[in-house]
Amino acid sequence: MTLEKFTIGVGDRFAHQAKAQLKAFQLAAAQGVAVSPVWNKSNREHTFIGSHPQSVFDAAEAAIKAERWAGGWHVDADHIRLETVDKFLPCSDFFTIDVADSIGKAPEERYVERFVVKHPELVGSVTIAGINEPYRTTRDGIAAIARKYVSATWEAGQIYQHIKRKKGAKKFIAEVSMDETDAPQTPPELLVILALLADTGVHLQTIAPKFTGRFNKGVDYVGDLAQFEREFNDDLAVIAHAVKAYSLPKNLKLSVHSGSDKFSLYPIIRRALERTGAGVHLKTAGTTWLEEIIGLAEAGGDGLALAKEIYGHALAHVDELCAPYASVIDIKRDQLPSAAAVTGWTGKQLANAIRHVPGHPEFNANIRQLLHVSFKLAAKAGARYTNLLKANEAVVAKNVTENLYDRHLKPLFIG
Picture (cartoon, helix red, strand yellow):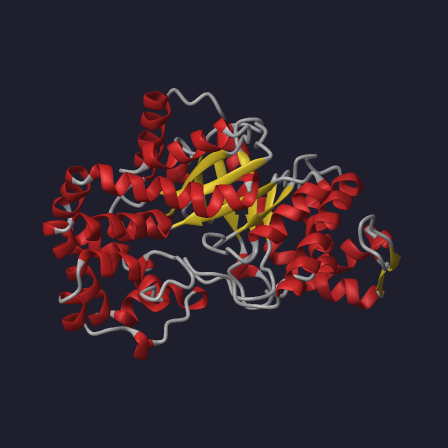
């Protein structure tokens, strides 16, 4: 199975927006740009909501059939580990293998020594096409990088081989994720990681490193744009080099996790893709849930009432809701309005506060981030929430489609 060149990871927390999401990809296709949707939902999100992996496939398949979509599409077992992968095997064809927790775990030194002996090409002056200056490395330096990543790549190999035994080598797509960790991987580290993965037999088609800067949920990038551009372009060069050097899949590409709403990065990414001809996988995840809340707020009545309720409950349980996402949110609590204040807002005010339109006087990034991680409150509302989604399908779907097409697909691929 071969992953398409351009793919967008989309989340659909409550399995109601697949058609609205697919409409955005249809709009891109009408402009001559082929981008494939990859519906994703992690084990953690299933646990929070009380859903099951098959529901993601079923909702996606229903939308594909209803809209007669002829392009590629996939269902991602997002951030899986060996202990969670089995429940995703029957209904997923894309597996995001998350080994970030094993980065830095000390391996037996003999494995480090074996790697360094096997790869003398990594030591000394390493020339990579597309990078101006050669990397100058030492044996000890390469050993130190290998020591940091051997355990993680070994674990990736164990998970990959397990999936391969269960599904067959040609029936799934593998991504390796190392983004949910403290320190970004440098391009030289990425080269060592790819060599290690090749040695363990992982035929990955995308890799998600941690980039420099902050990739907070649902808001723009915070960091040095020039540094990100250098890093992203160097990573593309490293991948192209590793594909040839280590016989990795020719379509191997970068995956940008927490990529939703990184508006300042999209021109950088687009320039790099146009210059190199590379592909990209960008994960937008929970933005669709935010568009549902925006749509309910705009709908007024019971929808607005529930949106305000959810905000009030979120405000009262900030620590609990934010803890699992502490590394990917930055909320200034003194800039969160009181529940009483929000109760008095109009639907338009609440929608404007949540919708990510930089520079809008009513936009509040702190409210947006808090609600981004508060989807389990909607799950607790159960049928009340999902019935309101159905009753207000038109306004919700409009927000979902416009967000994905106008704010993500267009700036990345169309202009």
